[in-house]
Length: 185
Image (cartoon, rainbow, N blue to C red; front, side, top):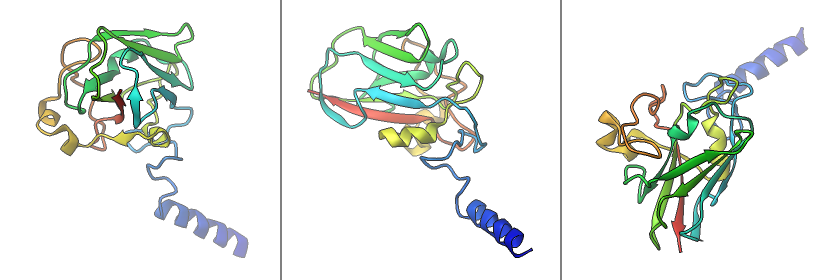
C-alpha cells in the first residue's frame, strides 16, 4: 500500500511541477498535447546564432522523419527579424523528404541577420505535428505575439514565395512557431 501511494504521489508531483510541460525534453506539440513520434528538427545549417555565415550558401534543415508534401511552404527565411522581408528562393526536398534545402534566389546581404521561421503546423508524413520544443536544443526560440507586433493580427507575407501565411501560423498556445537566427559574413 505504501509503495502504491508513493508512486501516485510521485506521479502527481511530476505532473504538477512540469513533467508534462512544454520544455526542451518533452514531446509536447503547439497545442499542449503530447505528441508521440512527432517530427523534430535534428540539425540546421547554418546553426542557430552562427555569425560569419557565407552569404552564398544554402540553408539546410534535417528532420528526424519524412515530412508531408507542401511543408516547405511553412518554413520562411526573413531578413532582419521574424517580421522582416522574406528572402526569395527555391526550396527542395531530398528524395527521402527528411532534408529541406533552401537556395536563395540571390546572394544574401553581407553582415546581416537572417531569421529562419518554422510554422507550428509543420507535419510529418505520419500526420503528427512538429515538436517545436525540441528546437530549443538547437538554439531556437518560440515566436510570441509581441515579436510579431502588428503582424500578429493579420499575419505577415508568405512562404518561400509570395502571398499570405494565413492559417497554420498561430498555435493554440498563442505562439507563432519557432525562429532560428544567423548572421552573414
